[in-house]
Image 1: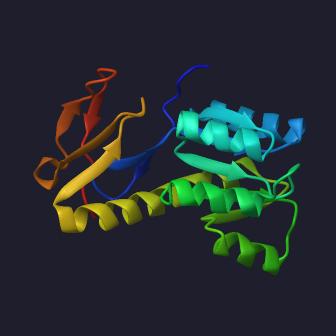
Image 2: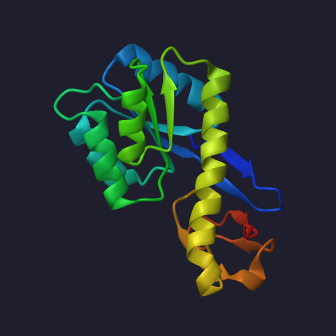
Amino acid sequence: MSRGVGYVVDTGDAGGAVTQNILVVEDKDETSEFLKKILEKNGFSVRIAKDGGQAHSTFAMYRPDMVLLDLILPGESGFEICERLKAQRENVPVVVISAIDLESSRNLAAKTGADGYLTKPIRESELLETIKSISKSAFRRSHRDKSQDQGAIRFNCTCGKRFKVSIKRQGKLMTCSSCGDSLTVPRQS
């Protein structure tokens, strides 16, 4: 699997949120391959899980930047999976992608922690815009929550290495000690 560039989300400053690794939880091969093709074409690295068990193990092993989640899955519902994933990492964005177009379903998805909801069939432009918008929102929320009080900025390299640096380093270049990539420390909004 090739490593793409994903999205550097414009946060209105020189920094940005990076969404590169996406977990797609979908039991229908046709839909999962469609989503994978679109996402990889746009520079994302994609992992597929077909049920709750695969979703949880893939989530733990590969620590995705975002999860695209169907609701109707064998064994465990998407609502249950969302709730469990959010319990493990509350800041990871989860976007529900479902054929169910009911307000009650949207409300339950929001209550279990979903950050977005798209109804099948999905247009490529709608999917990419949703990923960008939710990435930006999650980035701002997590940085505001963690760094305002602590005087630090937290972010990840595309290789998965986590960083916590002084707020004084925002906008400055640094090198990842794991992969050697050049990084720009995101600016705090």
